[in-house]
Every structure is written in structure tokens, then in C-alpha cells.
Length: 216
Image (cartoon, rainbow, N blue to C red; front, top):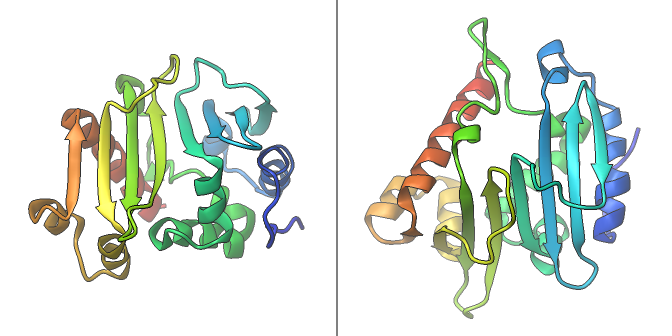
């Protein structure tokens, strides 16, 4: 059984070797195998590159270039990508990585595709969205960690259409449950800038998929 690397590996090794080996261990349900999804990955900086992960017919194909028709693209600096996976920073994001580390291949499973016997398309709603959203977590030393998500096909915009900014202390509070994201927004501890409609639409899609995962 493949293992998640405990020590940092180059981005190309992680994407082209580690992810496929983990995915190969998964036993997909019929609805999961029917998913046709292209995920672009753009890692910027030393050792970075561009890839496309294509989930289709229960198989995972990887290309060392980004498909401009990718439905979703993740954009991040190599240093921030590495810190989330192996350095535990920021903790709010590293928690998800830890689930992959300890949960094995099943942590790669897409969100639930059925709820109450009704089929739920994990791409429903996403196809209607267009734009790049960036989330930033800033600490007291004025350094920041960021990840961007481009929803929809097309070239990657140089700048995001919308940004979500949160302090590291507030991110930790949301993580431990002492601060609700809505409370953080109302109090100004969580800041939204740019195309707020895009953020709200993406949040609605994420909530639908989260509910599906809980009902599986």
C-alpha cells in the first residue's frame, strides 16, 4: 500500500507519482467512476510547473501541462504548497492534509455523490461559475500564505477577481470552533474583496457538496 511521504518531495514527484499511487488503491463506486473532471494545478516558483489531473471512467490521467478546459485550477506558490503539506502551516489548511496522510487513499475520494438515494453531480453549479478566487491567511509578521482557485475553463488571470483574507489567529479560532466564519465576517475579522457574488456562489456549491458527503 502506498504511503504519504513524511518528508518533502519535489512537486513533480508528488503530483506524478504519489497522487496516482494513492488513487490506484481506491475502490470507486459506479457514480464516482462516472465522474469526468479535469483539475489544473499551477505551482509557481522554484521547482514548480503546471499539470492537469483528469478523472475519467474511474481512471486518473496526468499531463505535465494545464488543460485550458480544466473545470477547476489550483494556483499556489511552491513554498506555500510545501508549508501546508509538510510544515503544518497554516493549521486550518494542514488539517485537511493530515486527513490525507492518516486516512490513506480514501481521503482522495470526491465529495458524496448521492444523498437520500438521489444522485448528486459534484460539478453541478460549478460549470456556471467563472473566475479566480484567492484565500490569504496573514500572520502578525505581515507574511502571508495564499492559495487561489480558478473556477471554469480559460487562461489563468494574473490577479484574482475576489479575495478572502483572514488573520492567522482568526484562522486558528475558526479551526478550533471558537469563532464562526459568519461572526468573523460580520466583525471584520474575515475580509471579502472584489466579486462577492462569485464568493457566495462558490460557497453555495461547497455547502451542497459538504451536505452530500455527510449523507453518503
